[in-house]
Amino acid sequence: RDLYEQRIAEILNETVLPGMSQWQKALSIHDYLVSHAAYDETYDNTTGYDLLVKNSSTCQGYSQAYLDLMTRVGIPCVLVSSREMDHCWNLVQIDGNWYHVDCTWGAAFGGVDGKCVWNYLFASDAQLGRTHSWERSEFPDATDDSLFFYTYHDLYVTNEEELAAKEPSVIISRRPCALLKYVKHNKPVKVDADKCRSCKMCMKIGCPAISMELGKAKIDPTLCVGCGVCAQLCKVGAL
Image (cartoon, rainbow, N blue to C red):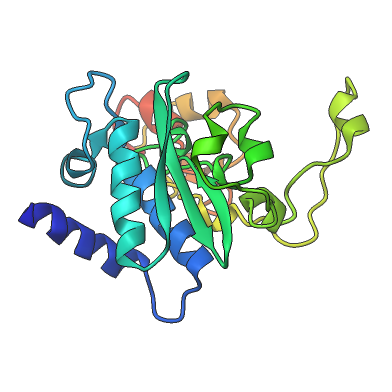
């Protein structure tokens, strides 16, 4: 229990800054849990302790850990359980309104690699009801959708005609993409000119960041996204 409390203190110290609003605290803690732990498909780890200490747990662990962290920062939070789905998540109250937060599903497309999604963050009953089912009479109503992550950042598509069109569409945001600050790119690949044998194997992948200069491979750091494919092809370890 002492180790669990220690981890809670460490996480709050890292995620919660002075002057943060309730929304910002709930978002920051959500992102930490989602991006620093993985779902335990063996079901050996099922508690909040397992999630924070072992970085692995089931939906019960995600929900319990989020509940405990919300309690520590003074944000009302309850655990929602669905018998039909055999699943659980949270409801948080921010500025008087309740919102659904499902850290488990947020981690389903992310996890320990530092990525997360926000499809199930600050959702209303109507929004979450598209993918989840629960006994609504047993839990607070969540009717407000103004804090839903993508709505809040003007990244929510509402044009039904565009959604139905069987052709590409362009979405124009009113502000810079809010997701970019959460994306963690790898460092650009560098070339060891002394090891490069000018075999041009790296050129075969057609990467716009790679060129040849004075008979050696050259990588433009402004174009390289650090995917590492070229390094995997290089047999002499020059990349």
